[in-house]
Length: 256
Length: 324
Image (cartoon, rainbow over all chains, first blue to last red; front, side):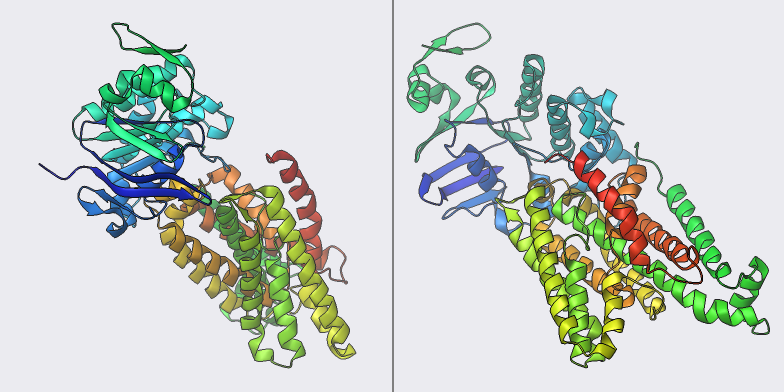
């Protein structure tokens, strides 16, 4: 069996005064779609930052394709793994196309400009998030949801082996929420990529996830979505009674 | 702001630069015709105007161009590092630090160490402002500006102290550093080489710098070595400011106004913005200095007065527009 795209071994996450989780280990393989669920402040963003190599796990190791993340050059790492952060900055004017094209950075040699192929990839990525009409627009003039989709287009254009997404559907209307998660899940389903995302919508999580990480107050559970995305587990996780309503398109979770 | 070839903009800026420098050589207390300017540059020493052009106006124009270019490039880099269009070497106290270093070197009689001392002052200011203005990994405009203003005020106090301690004969020469004046500027050619070197060092990092302006997390996950690129940009901005201050004293607001205006035309791609800012900054300062020495002729204004008069309203306008 080949090395997992992303391997997390004995990772402890701690912020000053608090341990968020202890001895977390899991393997993300091609074709898998992982969701990270947990109440506010449980450490979902911290876990994603650690998986992305932005924060050193203390202790523990993160490996990409069998190689320690700390041993990879920034460019190689950026081809294997990309992150959609919770918030993005638009301090300066830039067109939506320029932002999508920024995703090509790790693929373009330092001394060369972006080629026609990169521009085509960026345009395809904008089309995938339904923003192709805004390619020439300054993102500072776009709405919050539209900016979010442009930020996602950057990650799509980056085309990393593993996509990490921190609440990809924040600011999105229901139609784009559904469409965005379809797009992300499709990325994993092609069998060469994998997805790890923090989500708040349990129903959409249940529809797309193959695996889950439940984070809550110092403890973490990992496993398949079938084992973990159940009303009793989720009720205990959030401290809120939830009932599962079965439907042909997947389960829905309603407050009990 | 659709991506298009940067060459037309750069070519237009280069033409404007050449025209403004030519005008700077032609006008003044003795007006020299275009033909005479050309002959003087070609090395014809028979015309008496030739000496004025070659010995007085050309060095001053070159110094003005270099200083304007250096300040604009330093401002552009600081705006990337702080992710804030209000950053500028003058507003954030780098110029004050450089001036203070230069004055201290002069007062101690170490004239040979003026440039290194200016660099040390600018670098110290960079560390203080960038170190203190940071909260929770994000830059906030308020905190940044307050830190810059307080650091600049601190340098101001030290400068007053140095002036109070200085012998009367030195004070007038020292005031030069504080106002920003090109009337006695020397080393313009060397400053131009520094400008070229700073641009050459920055351009390979320009694509990384563009991403850095979108946030450190985004840049890092796109494969930018954030720490190294940041350190390199800090060092280049401090060096550019220090050289500009040693040549012309603290000329304010060029680093603020120029990258902002250029960004409106070419966007924030640093591969275009940095060279375009260098050309536009140089052109603007040559123009400002030519005005400064002609509008109230035979008296000459220090160029720093003009740039501040234009820069302050611009800064306030930007501050009103920017989100808190």
